[in-house]
Length: 518
Image (cartoon, rainbow, N blue to C red; front, side, top):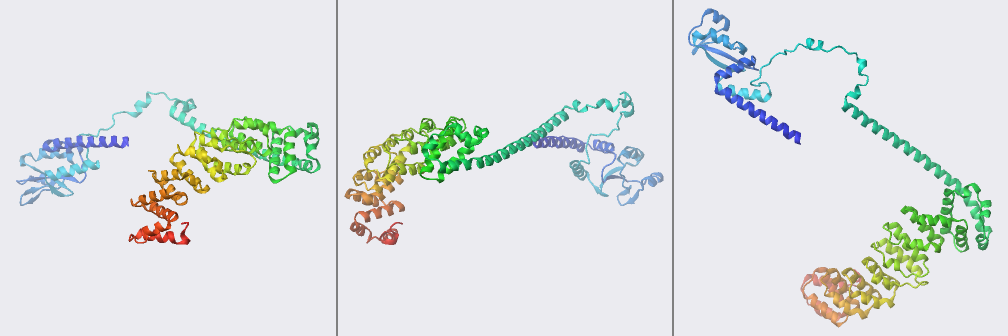
């Protein structure tokens, strides 16, 4: 853009300077004639002379004068360089110069317009005189002694621009070659590793299956390293890849089998020394290895590694944090939920569903201290605690919810209202009536809906007063439904004689049993 602007300015100033030159030329006819003489030839621009007395025969034969009503007129001349010499020959006859463009006579103004046109097309550049080159190229060339071409074998080093371009091209070629070579090496190693894993899996599945079916649990617990080396290839048993394949195979079988087979697999896992591999995974700096170790702890019931698992409950990595929490909920002997209360990161919907699934499974066998979640500094944890009361039916935690309601945020109030409606907490009607006055429309709407199920006479009066304020449609529908649920007679009295079309339609909607849940 800057280059275009610069060229435009140069072009503008050039035209301006040329315009000034033309103005000075047009102001002086003698100067204009001298400029035309210097140009020698002008495209389609000629001239002729007009005499008012008969010229001599020799002049007539040269310039071919013709007799007209206004005098003798010469033929059209195109060579402007002869203008001065013709003037000298015709001085005695008082010659009058006339301009012709495309053989048509024109005046001074027509000449100016034509020259300006030639200026724009580049066919006329005033003030410039073509001069032949005064340099003798042969003489100049003879001043330099001849040097053979072989002396410039390393000419690329003399041209620094060409040199750096060549360096850059070679750099990219080398980088591309290195990347291709690295990818091929990586692919070769990966294919070799996958092939080894298949071979190791075939070596493991047979002896492992024999152990599960031929030995009892106590016999597997008493196995020693020497016994394992007799069952599995001694040279391969100590290799990390062999043990990694063995762990994957054991975990895969553990998910499919039941009863004593699961206990045998867990016992063999510890006897084979695979627990130490899991411990190393938990201490790794890579999140994928940590998550793998957490899965191994959870599947193999490695209670002795729960201390390491607790260290990852507040990890910045979502996968590590989620898996460590699930492992603690599943394996911890007492689910005090301290780790969940102290969690700094918000709980996602996926985490809440995963934790709820585990808590539903273990809450009958473990004492869950859910009330600790009400005192968390993390709002998502407090909301999850309220949901757990509703999902698990923990009516014994209603006092804790009552305490939480006194400092609850709008989101927590909505969750509390839904929980009270689900478990039928009629004793919390004061909180429900208080939420009906909320300035938050979502809280108010939720409170009105719950009031229809749990409200009292005071709730009915509040709803009727609120209905008289002509609220928005969604709230009006909830108010009418709650009035109907609390006192059908009052609903009939308030809606039967109403002429408003929207109220009549809402009345029909509420009274229709097919639309009771719509």
